Image (cartoon, rainbow, N blue to C red; front, side):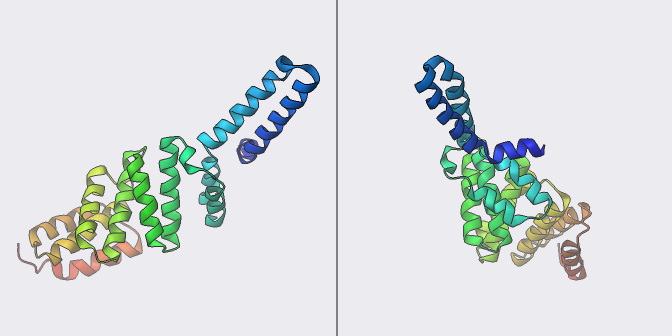
Length: 216
Protein backbone atom coordinates (compact mmCIF):
# COMPACT_ATOMS: atom_id res chain seq x y z
CA UNK A 1 0.00 0.00 0.00
CA UNK A 2 2.76 2.45 0.95
CA UNK A 3 4.63 1.63 -2.27
CA UNK A 4 1.47 2.23 -4.31
CA UNK A 5 0.82 5.54 -2.53
CA UNK A 6 4.44 6.55 -3.20
CA UNK A 7 3.92 5.69 -6.87
CA UNK A 8 0.76 7.84 -7.06
CA UNK A 9 2.50 10.72 -5.30
CA UNK A 10 5.37 10.77 -7.78
CA UNK A 11 3.52 9.42 -10.86
CA UNK A 12 3.79 12.71 -12.76
CA UNK A 13 7.56 12.94 -12.36
CA UNK A 14 8.04 9.25 -13.13
CA UNK A 15 6.05 9.85 -16.31
CA UNK A 16 8.20 12.86 -17.24
CA UNK A 17 11.44 10.92 -16.62
CA UNK A 18 10.13 7.99 -18.66
CA UNK A 19 9.30 10.27 -21.60
CA UNK A 20 12.74 11.92 -21.41
CA UNK A 21 14.32 8.46 -21.40
CA UNK A 22 12.24 7.62 -24.48
CA UNK A 23 13.52 10.72 -26.29
CA UNK A 24 17.14 9.83 -25.45
CA UNK A 25 16.70 6.22 -26.60
CA UNK A 26 14.94 7.43 -29.75
CA UNK A 27 17.91 9.66 -30.61
CA UNK A 28 20.48 6.92 -29.90
CA UNK A 29 18.71 3.80 -31.14
CA UNK A 30 15.64 4.79 -33.14
CA UNK A 31 11.88 4.93 -32.56
CA UNK A 32 10.93 1.30 -31.89
CA UNK A 33 13.34 0.71 -28.97
CA UNK A 34 11.94 3.89 -27.39
CA UNK A 35 8.26 3.10 -28.10
CA UNK A 36 7.62 1.35 -24.76
CA UNK A 37 9.05 4.34 -22.86
CA UNK A 38 6.82 6.75 -24.80
CA UNK A 39 3.77 4.59 -24.17
CA UNK A 40 4.38 4.18 -20.42
CA UNK A 41 5.21 7.86 -20.01
CA UNK A 42 2.02 8.98 -21.78
CA UNK A 43 -0.11 6.55 -19.71
CA UNK A 44 1.43 7.84 -16.45
CA UNK A 45 0.83 11.48 -17.36
CA UNK A 46 -2.68 10.76 -18.60
CA UNK A 47 -3.69 8.96 -15.39
CA UNK A 48 -2.11 11.71 -13.29
CA UNK A 49 -4.38 14.35 -14.83
CA UNK A 50 -7.43 12.11 -15.48
CA UNK A 51 -7.64 10.30 -12.12
CA UNK A 52 -5.49 12.49 -9.90
CA UNK A 53 -3.92 11.75 -6.51
CA UNK A 54 -7.15 11.69 -4.45
CA UNK A 55 -6.42 8.18 -3.18
CA UNK A 56 -3.67 9.73 -1.03
CA UNK A 57 -6.24 11.74 0.95
CA UNK A 58 -7.74 8.71 2.73
CA UNK A 59 -4.74 8.14 4.99
CA UNK A 60 -4.57 11.84 5.93
CA UNK A 61 -8.27 11.95 6.81
CA UNK A 62 -8.07 8.76 8.88
CA UNK A 63 -5.20 10.30 10.86
CA UNK A 64 -6.98 13.64 11.26
CA UNK A 65 -4.27 15.33 9.19
CA UNK A 66 -6.44 17.89 7.40
CA UNK A 67 -3.45 20.02 6.38
CA UNK A 68 -1.99 16.98 4.63
CA UNK A 69 -5.33 16.32 2.92
CA UNK A 70 -5.47 19.93 1.74
CA UNK A 71 -1.95 19.67 0.31
CA UNK A 72 -3.04 16.65 -1.75
CA UNK A 73 -6.04 18.59 -3.09
CA UNK A 74 -3.84 21.58 -3.88
CA UNK A 75 -1.54 19.30 -5.89
CA UNK A 76 -4.35 18.89 -8.45
CA UNK A 77 -3.27 21.56 -10.94
CA UNK A 78 -6.15 21.25 -13.41
CA UNK A 79 -9.36 19.94 -11.74
CA UNK A 80 -11.23 20.37 -15.03
CA UNK A 81 -9.19 17.50 -16.53
CA UNK A 82 -10.26 15.01 -13.86
CA UNK A 83 -12.69 12.24 -14.78
CA UNK A 84 -16.18 13.56 -13.97
CA UNK A 85 -16.96 11.33 -10.91
CA UNK A 86 -13.46 11.97 -9.54
CA UNK A 87 -13.93 15.71 -10.09
CA UNK A 88 -17.19 15.54 -8.12
CA UNK A 89 -15.39 13.88 -5.20
CA UNK A 90 -12.61 16.49 -5.48
CA UNK A 91 -15.09 19.35 -5.01
CA UNK A 92 -16.87 17.49 -2.20
CA UNK A 93 -13.59 17.16 -0.32
CA UNK A 94 -12.75 20.82 -1.01
CA UNK A 95 -16.14 21.75 0.42
CA UNK A 96 -15.70 19.59 3.51
CA UNK A 97 -12.30 21.10 4.28
CA UNK A 98 -13.67 24.61 3.76
CA UNK A 99 -16.49 23.76 6.20
CA UNK A 100 -13.93 22.74 8.83
CA UNK A 101 -12.31 26.16 8.42
CA UNK A 102 -15.77 27.77 8.64
CA UNK A 103 -15.23 29.26 5.20
CA UNK A 104 -18.90 28.81 4.33
CA UNK A 105 -18.84 30.74 1.05
CA UNK A 106 -16.08 28.53 -0.39
CA UNK A 107 -17.73 25.40 1.04
CA UNK A 108 -21.05 26.27 -0.61
CA UNK A 109 -19.36 27.00 -3.95
CA UNK A 110 -17.50 23.66 -3.96
CA UNK A 111 -20.51 21.63 -2.79
CA UNK A 112 -22.68 23.08 -5.54
CA UNK A 113 -20.01 22.27 -8.14
CA UNK A 114 -19.96 18.69 -6.87
CA UNK A 115 -23.75 18.37 -7.11
CA UNK A 116 -23.80 19.91 -10.61
CA UNK A 117 -21.33 17.25 -11.76
CA UNK A 118 -23.43 14.45 -10.27
CA UNK A 119 -22.33 12.78 -7.05
CA UNK A 120 -21.13 9.16 -7.64
CA UNK A 121 -22.94 7.79 -4.57
CA UNK A 122 -26.51 8.66 -3.62
CA UNK A 123 -25.55 8.84 0.08
CA UNK A 124 -22.84 11.40 -0.69
CA UNK A 125 -25.44 13.48 -2.55
CA UNK A 126 -27.59 13.48 0.58
CA UNK A 127 -24.66 14.50 2.78
CA UNK A 128 -23.74 17.34 0.39
CA UNK A 129 -27.28 18.68 0.29
CA UNK A 130 -27.55 18.49 4.07
CA UNK A 131 -24.41 20.59 4.43
CA UNK A 132 -25.74 23.10 1.90
CA UNK A 133 -28.98 23.25 3.86
CA UNK A 134 -27.17 23.85 7.14
CA UNK A 135 -25.06 26.60 5.57
CA UNK A 136 -28.18 28.27 4.17
CA UNK A 137 -29.77 28.15 7.63
CA UNK A 138 -26.68 29.77 9.17
CA UNK A 139 -26.97 32.58 6.61
CA UNK A 140 -30.62 33.04 7.56
CA UNK A 141 -31.96 31.75 4.23
CA UNK A 142 -34.64 29.52 5.74
CA UNK A 143 -36.43 28.79 2.46
CA UNK A 144 -33.32 27.51 0.68
CA UNK A 145 -32.19 25.69 3.84
CA UNK A 146 -35.48 23.81 4.08
CA UNK A 147 -35.33 22.95 0.36
CA UNK A 148 -31.81 21.48 0.59
CA UNK A 149 -32.56 19.54 3.80
CA UNK A 150 -35.70 18.01 2.28
CA UNK A 151 -33.67 17.03 -0.80
CA UNK A 152 -31.01 15.50 1.48
CA UNK A 153 -33.59 13.39 3.31
CA UNK A 154 -35.04 12.17 0.00
CA UNK A 155 -31.59 11.34 -1.39
CA UNK A 156 -30.63 9.45 1.78
CA UNK A 157 -28.12 10.43 4.45
CA UNK A 158 -25.32 7.94 5.16
CA UNK A 159 -25.23 7.99 8.98
CA UNK A 160 -27.80 8.13 11.76
CA UNK A 161 -26.28 11.15 13.51
CA UNK A 162 -26.56 13.28 10.37
CA UNK A 163 -30.06 11.93 9.70
CA UNK A 164 -31.10 12.91 13.22
CA UNK A 165 -29.65 16.41 12.69
CA UNK A 166 -31.61 16.77 9.44
CA UNK A 167 -34.89 15.74 11.09
CA UNK A 168 -34.26 18.02 14.07
CA UNK A 169 -33.56 20.95 11.78
CA UNK A 170 -36.79 20.24 9.90
CA UNK A 171 -38.59 20.02 13.25
CA UNK A 172 -37.34 23.48 14.22
CA UNK A 173 -38.33 24.88 10.81
CA UNK A 174 -41.84 23.47 11.22
CA UNK A 175 -42.08 24.94 14.73
CA UNK A 176 -41.16 28.37 13.38
CA UNK A 177 -43.81 27.95 10.68
CA UNK A 178 -46.28 26.84 13.39
CA UNK A 179 -46.87 23.55 11.61
CA UNK A 180 -46.85 21.63 14.88
CA UNK A 181 -48.07 18.27 13.62
CA UNK A 182 -45.25 18.14 11.06
CA UNK A 183 -42.79 19.31 13.75
CA UNK A 184 -43.79 16.40 16.01
CA UNK A 185 -43.47 13.94 13.13
CA UNK A 186 -39.93 15.12 12.33
CA UNK A 187 -39.04 14.98 16.03
CA UNK A 188 -40.20 11.35 16.27
CA UNK A 189 -38.11 10.50 13.20
CA UNK A 190 -35.06 12.20 14.76
CA UNK A 191 -35.41 10.18 17.97
CA UNK A 192 -35.91 6.99 15.95
CA UNK A 193 -32.37 7.40 14.60
CA UNK A 194 -31.13 6.86 18.19
CA UNK A 195 -28.37 9.49 18.01
CA UNK A 196 -25.53 9.23 20.51
CA UNK A 197 -23.38 12.34 20.03
CA UNK A 198 -23.66 15.05 22.69
CA UNK A 199 -24.45 17.82 20.23
CA UNK A 200 -27.46 16.01 18.76
CA UNK A 201 -28.67 14.68 22.13
CA UNK A 202 -28.60 18.21 23.57
CA UNK A 203 -30.85 19.38 20.73
CA UNK A 204 -33.22 16.47 21.35
CA UNK A 205 -33.48 17.34 25.06
CA UNK A 206 -34.06 21.03 24.35
CA UNK A 207 -36.91 20.35 21.92
CA UNK A 208 -38.37 17.59 24.08
CA UNK A 209 -38.98 20.05 26.94
CA UNK A 210 -41.75 21.85 25.12
CA UNK A 211 -42.78 19.81 22.06
CA UNK A 212 -45.30 17.74 24.06
CA UNK A 213 -47.13 20.98 24.94
CA UNK A 214 -47.63 21.93 21.30
CA UNK A 215 -51.06 21.56 19.72
CA UNK A 216 -51.56 19.18 16.83
